[in-house]
Image (cartoon, rainbow, N blue to C red):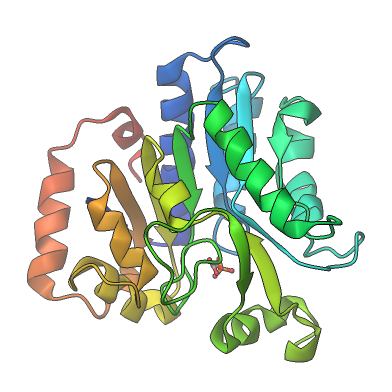
Length: 271
Ligand code: PGA
């Protein structure tokens, strides 16, 4: 697992966008052989989307032959709510790039049969041969997508109950009223994410410092879903300096040392 530690939120945004763009370019996707990209929502990836839009405008990357699968969606959220992830994704990313509408996949939390919706989503990912790159964030409780503490590494796309911790954190998007945050959601599983060719988690904000420590310095365990990334051969965490506050100084210097000699194409975008 790589851990890239950068100065601040803006550096994380540029670097994570550079990683996505470089992976797409390297794959040289076509309509017969598209690039399959898993995407997150929340506050953290907003800067990455802004940078990807900029790269697109500068001609660095095209999304014409990219198929996206979003990680999760609330159950029963009103169709016009800004936090409905369909709306979030259009406004913050899709309407600014060249991705064909039919290439976008987002779970429908208002489907008649949500169990069926999850099974069909998982099947569709498999039909494409799996996800090439899954991008995610983490919660302060270490969740990835809406896989809350205790989720199995074998888990697949399914209906989940959100933890009090997650609902409290997300209440800022629901007029600070936790009772307005849906209690259930649909999410890809940890197994779905770990099956991807590579996985990049972006972590900023000092409220994520404890979760980062549990993911990096602790063993793999179900109570800290982030820790399952260690099992992935191409796992990458891009984080800001402020999130490393609970890591041992030896851990921080070790990962910084490794990255100094890394010549991967995304390293071209150093700050
Ligand atoms: P955030 O959410 O980016 O809004 O902090 C991340 C998450 O809960 O996975």
